[in-house]
Amino acid sequence: MLSRMLLSPRHSVKVRAAVAVSLFSGLALGVQAQVSSSQIDEVFSSLKSASAPGLAVLVIRDGKPVFQHGYGVTDLRTLHPIGPETNFRLASFTKQFTAMCIMLLVHDGKLHYDEHLTEIFPEFPAYGRNITVRNLLNHTSGLPDYEDILMKQYPNTPPEKIPQILDAGVLKLLEQQSRGEFPPGVKWEYSNSGYAVLAMIVEKISGKPFGQFLHDRIFAPLQMNNTLAYQNGINEVPNRAYGHKRDGNAIRETDQSPTSAVLGDGGIYSSLDDLAKWDRALRKHTLLSEAEMQPALTPVHVADGPPTSEGRNVSYGFGWFLDPYKGHRRMWHDGETIGFRTTIQRFRDENITIIVLANRTDIDPKDLALKVADLYFSEKR
Image (cartoon, one colour):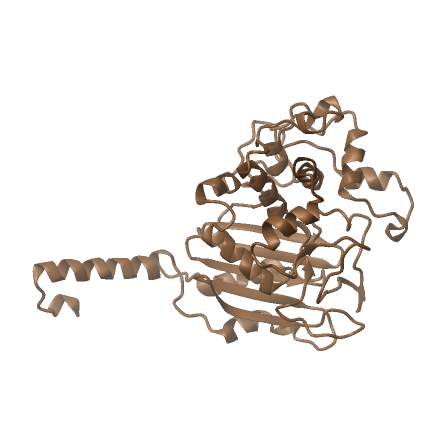
């Protein structure tokens, strides 16, 4: 016992300081020193299959991958096993990349967060005069939902018969509207429309197609060599996983919808291998300095107004939800689209990142990722 050791006063101070640091690191943060691969694997064990779609899991701790595994197959035709190189459609997980594109243009001095929509697109209707780039980034723009508008144009039409819309088409739909859903900044309402418009802002300001800007400024510098914004007929997804849904007792492929070609709100495909590089870049501030990243990590505060279905106390920055989990600071985002569900959970103080990418919609990646987090977050204090 330390109390029985004969220590000089100077040595005693050092020992007490070391003990205090150890106690803070191991107990105050409530993080288990060791979590075995078998414990993590058990969370996903029910998804082991050689004939059904599944998911890929990556756990990074202190910058190092400590668990990486695929469960199930990429599609029901080839039955190719899912691996760390398998590319999944990220769905709304994409929004953090779209936000980064905007932030890079701000870094370049070509754009400002408080520029208005009509300054960038002078032909946009009057209701865009008070919508800023910042409003688009943090979902306080009040833009109408483009998916609702699109579907109303094709009443009683099966989704597979509706032509796919692009980001430019979204902007045109919004330009045909006479007003927004609410005045900008009054409340928070999750907006895929806003992120499609952000992709078009990237194109207008940079002079490059959105997918090219993503490649040139994010994917290529980080050597995310197999990550891309998928455009049918223009590029191909390597090592592609196809989306699936459960239909009664059967599972069938459901990979594309009328909105699957919109890139800014959810069109990126990526893999565990490449997302590990993205996580490293966020941790090391490779693309933007820590100070330049702060706006993305600052939650929006809305004025008083009627609550939304998500609630008035949503904590959202630029492409990231920012609410804590069991007292642990985190930045996170889910993605869900036809055939795919995804999540990234980054715990900032503990340096733990959990990524789950699924090519089936009858499972909840966020729930599974948080079960992994619970393995690390001890209840002991």
